[in-house]
Length: 67
Ligand code: SF4
Image 1 (cartoon, protein in one colour):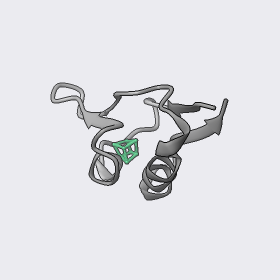
Image 2 (cartoon, helix red, strand yellow):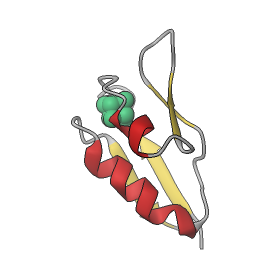
Image 3 (spheres, rainbow, N blue to C red):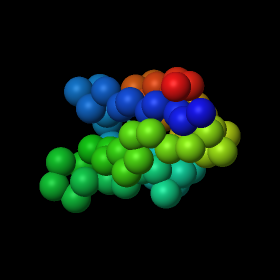
């Protein structure tokens, strides 16, 4: 089963914690200073990484779901 990751960019403050925790899933846009989601539907073996990134986000704008 795959994961589904969403980022509410309106609330993203560009802290970059997500990128530091999961550099293969998140990057930061140089122009907007906000997160770029590199993989919206990564495989389930990335769950731990994705959850870690979500927990690290000070703005709590990363959502990780199964499916
Ligand atoms: S940690 Fe959260 S607020 Fe910071 S860049 Fe990532 S998504 Fe945006």
